[in-house]
Length: 220
Image (tube, rainbow, N blue to C red; front, side):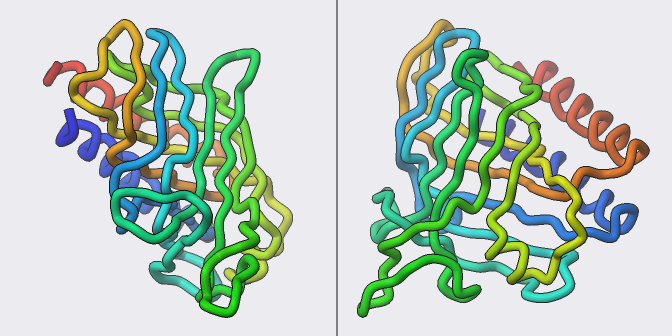
């Protein structure tokens, strides 16, 4: 399952990379990074919720400035030690949301104490799910509209006012989690973000995610 979901995340990332030249716009990819496993994820057989899921890395590419990999810190403890960004989300219709808060020291985002620890996280991403593909034990891929922190947008030199979206959202959950529901710990997370693409790029994205999902079905 872990190998399969990593393959799906890779397929979504490949689509994102293809989309960048057409959009001439940046992509921000939030990942587990060095945080390791952590947080709580609950699958009810139809929807997924996640709380205090650690995010330790932000990869930025295609931006006017500050492209590269940046450590995300915050108030969430995880397997990797230290403290990391906090991802919370729910796909349930009556409580549909996704939010990610944290500090990115290298970009001057967030508040820090004298030791350099993040003590005042910033909301880096705030949005809702518009669609998701559910698998035997949870969310495989999702997409939706979101708002980025202005501090983050300023840091990458992006100010054209386009709305943003997340896509290629994927989480890896424990093999022992029941197909009918259960609670577990998130092993890895990947959230790809970009300004809303042109219609042609959206078609490319949809084709890539569909191909990944079909590959998952064949291996199930």
